[in-house]
Image (tube, rainbow, N blue to C red; front, side, top):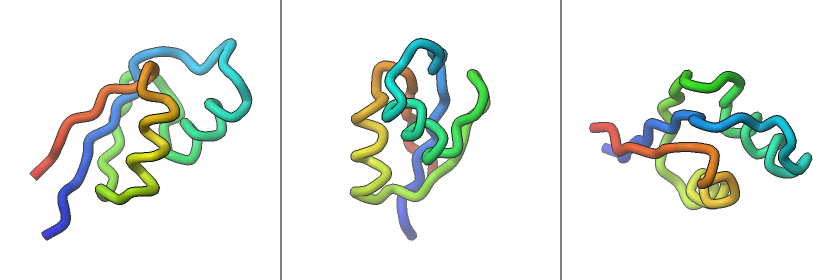
Length: 61
């Protein structure tokens, strides 16, 4: 069974670079406080690193 990650946007994308805004959208984060459960993969981990100051990440079983 693959590990999943619960990613929640905790800070706004307003005033951020276009690259960071596109990364948030790519993760499926459209509103603050609304979590998304995503598969744990190197691509997702890389996207999270790019916006780590805007999101929180928790493992889900």
